[in-house]
Image 1 (cartoon, rainbow, N blue to C red):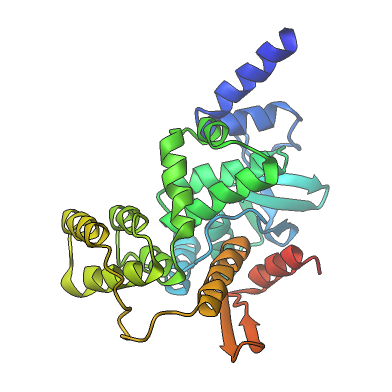
Image 2: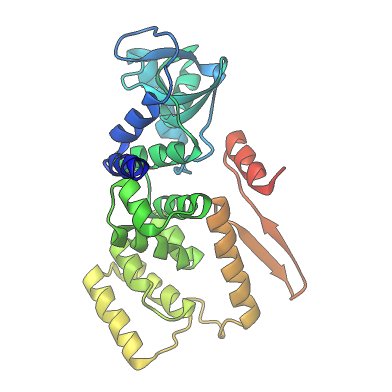
Length: 302
């Protein structure tokens, strides 16, 4: 009974957000010797590595350079958070953008909170920190939720408790991963909203989804108008061709698209499968940095 109460208490604290996660992680182990007040430590920049659970995939280079210029002038205003792997190795929990900008600015060390955290806590902290800062697009959030569920055998309700979200919210994000790549790209690039995407999920075919996507972008349709259009398409059972007005997609091509979408979710990047006939082709896995390449290689087990 005591153990059950202890587990329940821990879950409730994790559900309150990033602050409680950090508090739980810190309590497990004493931090290294302080070099500053308020539990902030100076950590050498070259002893820090990226977070393999980083939910944010896109870092704008121009914005990163602007931050580096600001750091040169004003220094680091908000410390990053890391976990200690060894006496000379640290891994980022949150603050990768500040760390990258600090390297660009030529800093030798960076102020940081040093925490103790397992992989699951680290993933949750990174996700919550980015959500609270509104740095993630809906697809990045959806991929992070799915990864937490898959890798740590969590139910959607349990995940909601741990990240401070309702189960329905978690479900709505995960459903986005069922959308075709073109729709997910439009959502990621803010060409459509979460409300638009939720309506597109209700359409039965990829052709219909892509048809409505084009109308949303070209005609600047509101969510309410899209809702009405989706309702009409479902009522009539219309099978609309895509913008290219091509023939119905073959079963083989649909299977390729499904596989492409599944791989894109697994690797958290847009995978391209180019076919040549039905027995030849190539798979392209893009990466945006050396760290991103190493992340992909880890997934491949190389």
